[in-house]
Length: 190
Ligand SMILES: [Mn+2]
Image (cartoon, rainbow, N blue to C red; front, side, top):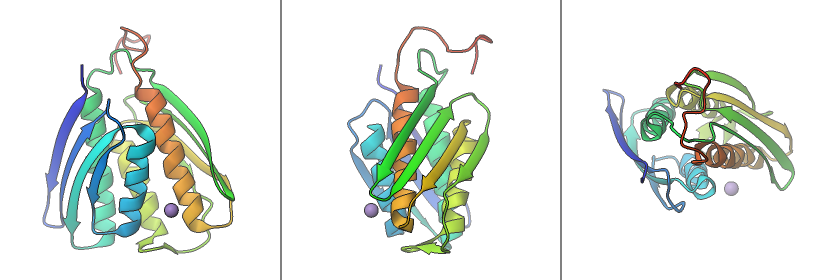
């Protein structure tokens, strides 16, 4: 079975279209209007092996980052369906030159976000740090995941966020892998 989902979201602020193929090869076509976000979502696809087609436009950076997070998270949750057979948990430590990131996550059906990107500047390339944080918040909420994402150390701001996205990607790859015939919960539902 190929796990695929499409989601779109249109408001007065933004228009977002996403298609995900979970059992993909890491191919992506991503246009958000923000180069750094495109770069990060391309990494997310490459290292999770999820194929991502994403088109986004909108008025403000903050709105686009938020709504891309919402739509991408909702689409991931939709593609996971009843989560039958998935690993459910995933974790990864990923270095990016001077930076080290750790991601531990659970597709529990509930949102929790424990995030520290260890950033000490306000902007990275063409996005604001607070919008990156907002993206992770929206993504975790709509993917219905517990996301514990930390940059343990690093010097370069770009490297720190890049390490975080790569760790997220590798943890997702592990968590969505089909490893059994069962829904991985003692409650019988996720
Ligand atoms: Mn880079």
